[in-house]
Structure formats: C-alpha cells, structure tokens
Image 1 (cartoon, one colour):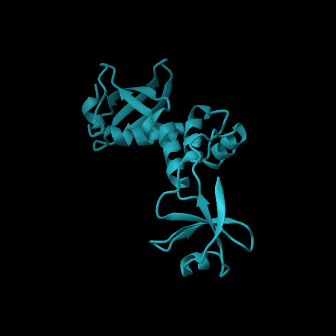
Image 2 (image 1 turned 180 degrees about the vertical axis):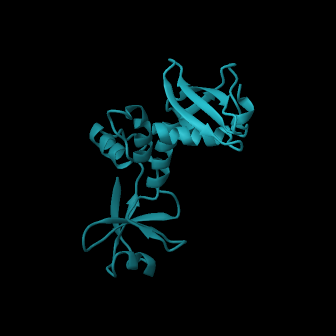
Image 3 (image 1 turned 90 degrees about the horizontal axis):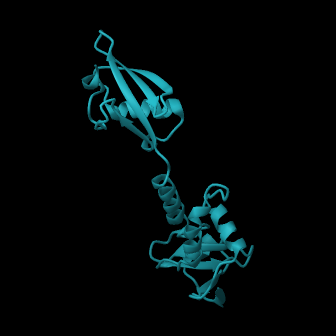
Length: 195
C-alpha cells in the first residue's frame, strides 16, 4: 500500500498536475500481500484479459499487482482531482498509466500467442501451365480451406499470409505440410513443390 507524503516536486511533475502541488505517494511493498479475487479480476480486465478465455493468465495480473514501481518512476496524487499519475524524474516524462502497464499487456499478448493453437494445413500444388501454381490448402480432416493461385515468385511465407487473411487467422498460427509429410521452409518457392 502507498502512504501519502507531502513533498516539493520539480517543474515536470508540477506541469503534469496542471500547476498544482501534487502529493508524492511512497511505495511500501508488502511481500505477504495476497491479491483479492476482485483485485485480480479488475487488473486482468485492465490488461485486456477475457476471464472466460484467459483465466490461465491470471498469474500475469498477480505479478502486475505485486510488481514494484520501476526506478526512476514515482507515483503522485493530484490535489485538484485526486487522480494518480506517474512521473520519471530523469526524463521528465509523466503519464496517467502505470509504467508497468504496457510491459504486462505485452507479456499477456506474447504468452497468449505462444500458447495459441496452430492450424496445420496440407498444401498440394499443381502446375497450371502458365508459370503459376494452384495451391490447394486442406485441413487435417481433409476439408478444403482454400485454393490459392501462386505466381512463380510466391514463397510459402507469402502463401501463409494470403491464407491467414482469407481464414481470419494470425499468420503465426498456420503451419504448412506437404503431402510428403515435409514442412516447407518459408523462403521456399511454392512453384518448386508442384507435382
């Protein structure tokens, strides 16, 4: 919990508070603090989590709640509207958002992306006779997902981008495999794999 302490602050912090004299909030770390469920859910929502889908990532919200303020950042409370803002005394930067907000949002997104399921797509390529290739993309269940016409210079990274857009998936969630059970490299040209 933070305890209020009146201090004289420099011009940057005063400017962030519209000219009024803010109150410096001293950070007191309680290493035994266990966040309540309400605190965790509020923090999870703040970080962009959907508790119906993202409950496995509550550890990030817990870490965020207990994380110390990074140096040289300090928290201040405005006397005028009682709002908390953050000020970096070295750079002169001030913000309404906690300095750790963005780090924990990015950590959540990275963990969620890392754990996202992948879609394995079998790509069967057929030469069309005009220098291009017809790439038939099927799911492991054998369902045709798309047929993509690829020019001679099209590589598998480009095919993955086209397919991701068509299927409304992230590019990183698609994995290709050829009928020979070989996974092509992204730089490999699709035309080289035609039958």
